[in-house]
Image (cartoon, rainbow, N blue to C red):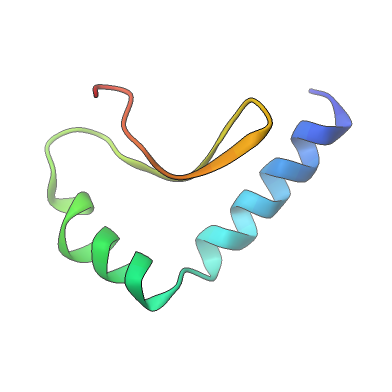
Length: 56
């Protein structure tokens, strides 16, 4: 893993720990209840996406 991806992973972990009120609401009241697996603050290339569902 290159240095840039390691920084992104670290930032993504920090964002997961410090979700906004709106993100918490969306995650705990909607997305976490889905049958599909949804990931929070997922690194895709040079980006961190808030929510990611591979099935979609």
